[in-house]
Image (spheres, one colour):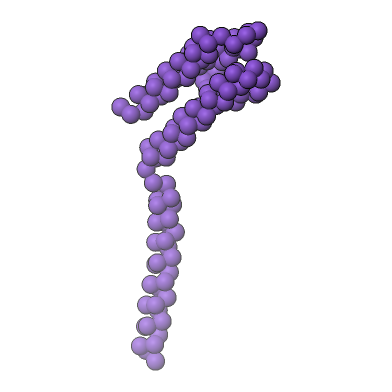
Length: 127
């Protein structure tokens, strides 16, 4: 009878210890390296900017002003509103959408500004 009580107590304390250890270990495993999470989010952001830039180019080629306005809004929500280079990207879209005929130089300026934004972000986050 004594050994049954001891075995039950040891078994119960082992289970409780495992549960407590599991509660504290789980959040640490989920958190991971904060820099890794930031890097993943930045990669997603760059992919989103590339996708939006391609869509802007297509809409400009099709002269679809409604879609250009929507894409400009999407880009504005993904850019820094107080950064001069970011606002220059939005201004380039404005100039492209206001033209009667497509201007390849204006569209190239937009593409170049997006490329510089992505390059700057890459350089800032890789060392």
